[in-house]
Image (tube, rainbow, N blue to C red; front, side):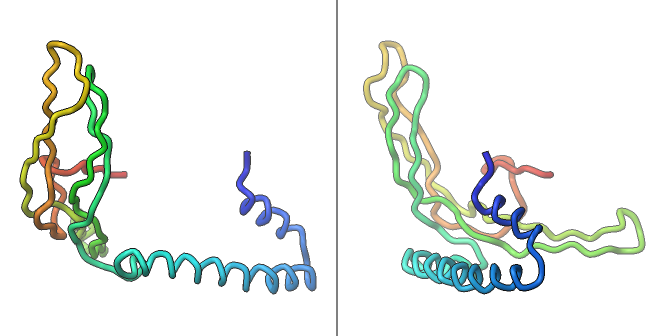
Length: 149
């Protein structure tokens, strides 16, 4: 099933001249209103997320679960952000200089909770990290899922 946006985009390809201008005249203000609405929502939730560059501690909710126990919804602090990254070509091998940083944990503490309704013989305790300080740094597989393309 195609999204409505992709159907509209395909139908615009068959338009020409004045019809194309009318389509843009209508969709331009509609898109602007949509973006303005999104900006208001984002700016009211603790800062403008579109322009924030850096790494910060932010509240995060997840479902803690393990086999044999019911899940428990936990709200904790985690690292969130966007870090500067760049690549540039160079003349010597490896022919590229890369600077890639991710928003990652700088300092954590461990918290243990007891999961509800665990089956007999199942350890009901669940331990998870809580972010104390976050920073832009190299990705460490000890604390972060590091994925490359």
